Length: 193
Image (cartoon, rainbow, N blue to C red):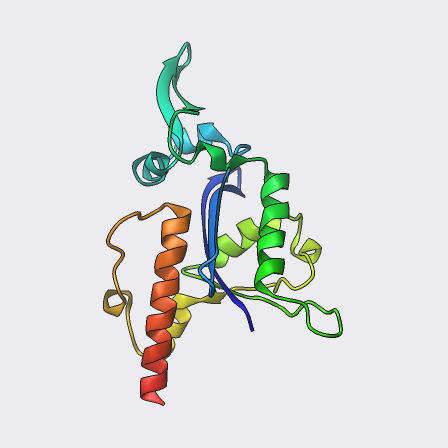
């Protein structure tokens, strides 16, 4: 089954999960990265953790306005070309999955396998790109395999896993690191067999 490792950065707003960015990588090392132009910038500004860890990875500038601090998209920063509407991101994520999972002779699209790290909220953020879980495109599973579950099954803790050297909380860098961990865990599982 074709595998896509992915990560989402998100903000919680009024009980909702608001996609900020998404990174994906497949077994052929094809990569996808996008930032939601429609994410609630005020929710980022209001969350200290997001300000410290995520905002610095985005093409945003912190400034002040008449009502205090504000964030604004900055076309002069790296990755500004990755800032897109949610509808455009949804189309591109579907295309990425279609390119990853080739149709078989019957014309049916096989399911892709989604892998995430602590992926419950990531999966919800992904599903919400399309509406509800019932609106997922053909070939998308209604759940993601979680790296932490596999580590626990193998008797490992988070401290045992390969550590990310840089790029934490950039969705694409995190997806690439998750792919590294997934492959490392697969080798451990094979060794234990």
